[in-house]
Image (cartoon, rainbow, N blue to C red; front, top):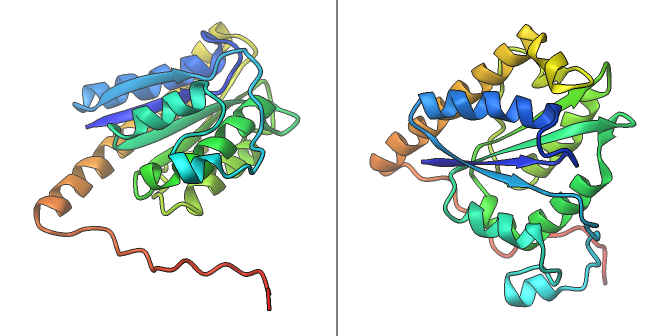
Length: 207
């Protein structure tokens, strides 16, 4: 089993990466493989609602979004990490997630997911709330920990001193591993996720 870890920070080895590494180490200790995906620092355009992905299965922009979608085909779980910008995830990550979920939602559905946030002081909870909504409207179980999934600090060295935050990251990894194993056992006994109703009803009031 594998879990994809998305680093939404412009800093490849910053505070968000430090938190994700703690989650990854816990997953690895539980026998779960991890894959890393850094969104990078190049401009990430937002979704244009062009419909290209509905025809081809891929976003019209060829960047890390399509790479992450490809990785999710072989991964069983997802962890998204973000720095906090104005009490919200940074804009590049939001563009990334908009396009990833719109173009590859079926590849992510029913896979356990978690959001983590790194902040100097505040805004983590609201940032995680934004990311969690991507999961909850896409049939994805949300994995919890023993406290808010957050670390604090301005530098990775600061995060090293946030013992509660790092412990929360480790517990998150263990809970993710436990849920993945539980789902695997359920599937071995013929228990699958509920079928999705078709056609999908959308509220638009068109007459």
